[in-house]
Image (cartoon, rainbow, N blue to C red):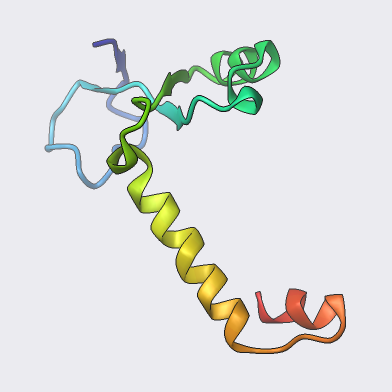
Length: 92
């Protein structure tokens, strides 16, 4: 695993122990769909110092948190009726 070195004057995340000199490199986790395997998407995170990883195929637990969030948002939106697009945007 690769780590980033940061100095004493750089901001330390709250979850890092006091006096730590290494932290994990940020990663972008995506599934294996065609939209997420493109060359453009691979270059963009690298330009920001991130790496891209793909979730395991046919393993729903990998994307569980975001799928649960999407389902919750969908259920919330379906509870109310919006007749105009900006009514929905105001609620979000």
